[in-house]
Amino acid sequence: MGILEKISEIEKEISRTQKNKATEYHLGLLKAKLAKYRAQLLEPSKSGGTKGEGFDVMKSGDARVALIGFPSVGKLLNPSISEPAFSIMVLLIGRIYKGANIQLLDLPGIIEGAAQGKGRGRQVIAVARTADVVIMMLDATKGDVQRSLLEKELESVGIRLNMSKPNIYFKPKKGGGISYNSTVPLTQCSEKLVQLILHEYKIFNAEVLFREDCSPDEFIDVIVGNRVYMPCLYVYNKVDQISMEEVDRLARRPNSVVISCGMKLNLDYLLEMLWEYLALICIYTKRRGERPDFSDAIIMRRGASVEHVCHRIHRTLASQFKYALVWGTSTKYSPQRVGLTHIMEHEDVIQIVKK
Image (cartoon, rainbow, N blue to C red; front, side, top):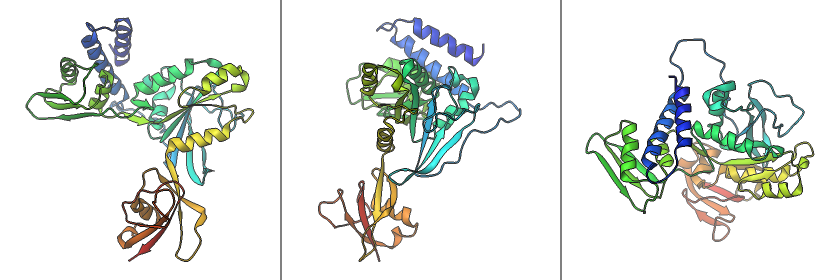
C-alpha cells in the first residue's frame, strides 16, 4: 500500500470515528500517523530521474505576497490575463503602497488534491511557504466551498493560516524517559496521550511543558517542527454578482475583504489591509540642519529598533553610532535622544549622530 492510500485510509477512519472521551487516544494516534505520512509525502523523491522544472522565484523587495486560488477565480490586477498552465507570474515588484517594494506572486490555480501532487500543486504550495502573507482569492459566487478546500490543502502541507505557534516547550533528550508538565489546566491533552503520540514518532526520552491548553494536533505540529505560521487575507472576488446581504455577511467574517476586480471595487481597502498584515512601517531620515526627507522612506518590519535602521542605511553605521534623535509616536517628546535599542514606530523621523 502506497503513502497516498495509507493517508486516504487514515482520513476515512478519522471521519468514521466518533469523537468522545473513549476514542481520544485512538484519534490522537491516527492524527500522529497522518502527520508522519504527509511529511514523507512532501520529502523529495530519492529515485534517480529527470529533474522537473523549478518553481521558486528569487525573493526581492520589502515583502513577498502569494496569491492562491482555484484556476477560475480571476486575477487580482488584470482579470483579462489568461492563466498559463502551472507557471508562476511575478505580477508586480514595485511601490504599490506607501513606497514599499512588494513582490506579488500569482501562483498557478490549485486543484483539489494539490497537496498529494496533483497538478504540480505540491511545488506551488511550497512557494507559498516562503511568502510573508497569503492572499487567498475566492469566488464570492461559490459560497464557502473553495475556502474550506484550499485551507485543507494548505494545512496538509504544514501551512497554518492566522494561527500563532503553540506555546509548548519540547526538547528530546538522550535518557531519563518523558518528563511531562503543564502550567495551565489541560482539557485536550493528557499525559497518556502525549506519551502515545511521542512513541509513534519513536521518541522515548523528552521534556514536554505545556504553557497553554493545546490540542493533540498542535502538539504534533510542535514535534514535527517544520510548520509555517503566516497571516492570510481571504479576498472574495466578484461581489458585484451576489446580493447585498451576502456581501455584508462575507465582509463581516474575520480576516476577509470583499472586492470586484472587474468593476475595481474596494481595491484601496484591500491595499490598506495588506499593509496591516505585512506589519510594515515607514521610517524617514533627516540630516542635521535640514528638513526630513519624506520622499524616500525606509521600509522596516514592525518592532524594528534603531540598530536595524542603521544596518539598513549602511552596514558600518551601527559601529560608528553615538546617538539618534527621533521625532514621532515612539518618543515621549520630540525630538528624543535614544540609543540603538529604541523601538521605532510608523512614520517616525530619525537623525543619526556618529562618533
